[in-house]
Image 1: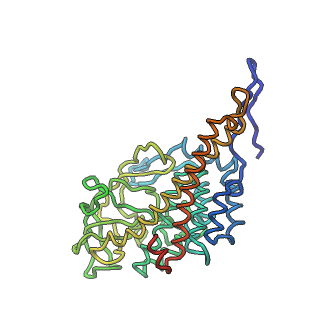
Image 2: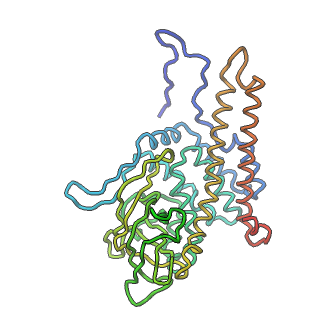
Image 3: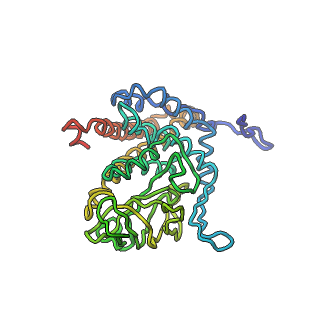
Amino acid sequence: MPHFRPRQSLATHEVTNQPPPFEDINLYDNDAALMGAVEAGGGDAHEQRLSAFGARCGSAEVIEWGRLANCNTPVLKNFDRYGHRLDEVEFHPAYHELMTLGLSAGVAAGAWTVDQAGHVLHSALLFLMGQAEGGVCCPMSMTYAAVPALLHEPRLADEWIPRATALAYDQRFIPAAGKQAVTIGMAMTEKQGGSDVRANTTRAHPTGTATGPGAAYELVGHKYFVSAPMCDAFLVLAQAPGGLSCFLLPRWRPDGTKNPLQVLRLKRKMGNVSNASSETELRGALAWMVGEEGRGVRTIIEMVAMTRFDCMIGSSAGQRMAVAQALHHCGIRSAFGRRLAEQPLMRNVLADLALEHEGALALTMRVARALDHRDDPHEDALV
């Protein structure tokens, strides 16, 4: 549909000396630093794909989706009107449009599904997605990051990784077996420990005689911060008889009933508001052990490390959009007889911002390149 501009000629004055909205701009083709970093990382084969995605992320339509997703924040629906337990989070349609855009483009899957420069591709895709809207990057990042942790349990990996790396998004709240694509989250933090996860009190009780990797357990306890609670499954830390262990906890049990992962409330946040974060209770939730018993931190750190890398990408993306907006504004608006970008002090400020952003991007993409070459001892040491 056509994008109509607001009126500039008003009854009392003309609106002049204002830049047009920063939109309908290809965020990839207009970013020389990003294109250079992708080329340096061996990602030449992905340039056409990234250019197309950059055009979508910078389009007026997608930027409007981001605005709508942040203005219409998630709503928790604990019960239906008859008193049945739901534990569902309702999002504005713009949120689902953004999720479809990113996951279909390969933000979560790219690193694991291409033959060359997969992490460079992932990094560039997430970098572009984060400039369109940062909140949806959280579930995409966790889904991407879950893959190396799931590989610790081959049976679970065979079942979940193909869906986690599908180029699709399925928003339906149904068992994962009926979905082509899934998202995967993480639940570690508890009130008494915070980042000190060894202080966790959530307990894991074996459901039968089988114990250890791949065995089924029921989890009882609480998680103080669960981001993206509408994910289809979560990697969770809980105290098994043999110590703190990692588990895969789906939202649904194999018999089609809801797993008792109960959302108590959504968190109030200063940022990332389009994405839901929640406090939850696990009331006998069925889960399967991933990795060795008592080595849960070692297992889940595979996922944590990848999400921390994505924090580098997200921070760099935020810097890039801020610089791009500033350059756009200062290149058009005039003051004291010259455009702002031509004023010496303003040029110094803009140059400093650009250098800081490009430095952050260079470091981020250098780590992405190292992730693609873990077989090299030097690159592995850098990672």
